[in-house]
Length: 223
Image (tube, rainbow, N blue to C red; front, side, top):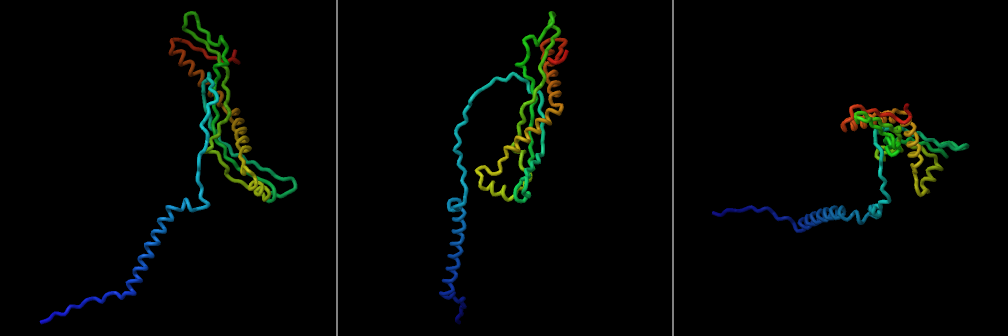
């Protein structure tokens, strides 16, 4: 008795070659994609590369400070600066910029301005009197991370000028105007009065800790 076996027909040679071509093509595509991702930063002619060639920081001077930083105020202002041409419409010549300026102003008392007799002590060393100058305001310190151009409109001539300029979008005027407005706001606020009060409290506590039972702190403009 004989047993017959049935075998599957083998793929035709032409069909096997087509599958090999397809598999080879897929492998080639994968290699090109992976290799392209690795080589793209070097092959892309428009790619950017950042190189820091800054020189070492040079310490120019050191100045001793004799002042007490008594208070700090945080301010924010929206600068609306518009520049118009006399006889041209805004679409042709003119700019309007909204700039958000944020920063702090320090109030301090300069101890180096105190007179030689600013501190008087009673004979029994139980009372002390101090005369201080009034608090002053430091220049505003704008925070670059919180100061930015919110919106800007420019005429055609201004766009062309900015394109050809070596420093397009110069914001120095905006920063200066923001500093001016923040300074005016700090002067009008109670920042200096708060600094005066904090300085009086600091000196009173310090002198009492040294054993003085009564401490009087006055300012030079007080009787």
